[in-house]
Length: 403
Image (tube, rainbow, N blue to C red; front, side):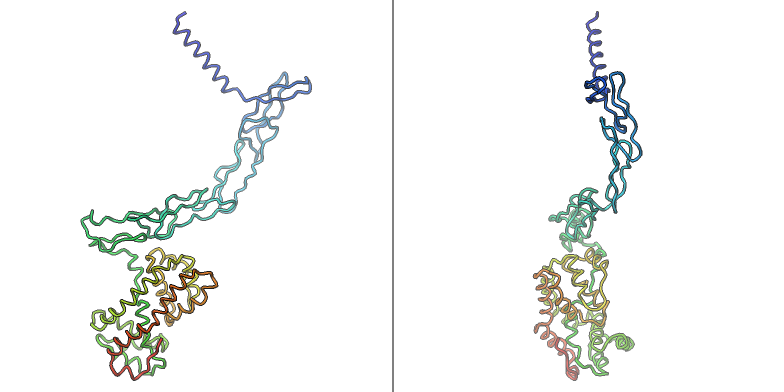
């Protein structure tokens, strides 16, 4: 016989044997009492159970698993397993119970299983990006944005983004980015966050203006002040609206705020703003080192008197404003919502209650330094030098309030 043909027949014989071995069912030992010896029986395939063990003259008899029961592998069991998995709240049935599989549940989108609970994936804060997205079995992994990258939103999906390379675009960098904001190139319009974080009157301006609020204003005080202020006058109709809408203690502050807005280019306003710059720099340093979390901001704003800011508003400011602007913007929004409230007094009131919430001491101390500076003799001297000299003798007719 041809040698090649012989080799082919040998290989074919081996292949047939392997195929037969692979398709043969696994075996199990069963003691047959009728013949008093052990038999090698075939196991039943997945989705079935042993209805009748094999005998010396018959093979194993298998039967399908009843509804809500299963077997997921070859076995010699005389019953199927019950589909005992039940999907809990915030889970869905990813795999249904079948004759070959138990039910499998998975947490809904945006959540992961921790012990028996489906918890919400962690949203990485500003300045942190998603290094690994959360899965139904694991939480988000956040990582601080490295040098040259930023994350300007609180997100459980957004990774850190690279700063725009202005020079590669042939542009000059007019504002260097940080971990929470992108670079701004020359010729680019500032993003919406700049507008969202604008503050009509800063804490320093408010402190300065409130030094001029009399302890007991006379009936003609507001008109006297209006006429004494240089530059463009606030019109009479506006003054009357201020009188109608605001308390006597608040009217002076509102008038000065409008006067400043109408006279931004006036030399006296410029002098005042230059004097306030020192205050602004000091406040920014104190605020910039607070590292206040979303929960802490919620607690702080909740403890201010009057109307409260909602958590959605606070979260929006956290997403839109950089860290050094967040507290200042929230205090500004609180004052707007409580238009007859003094922001500095409101902050002092809120600070009294923070200890009960185990607030970090460094944060409380930082906020106290802000309040102390706004009450300082430096600010009062600035008021005396710029404001009293500007208004002259007329302002001395009314006793001014020391904050």
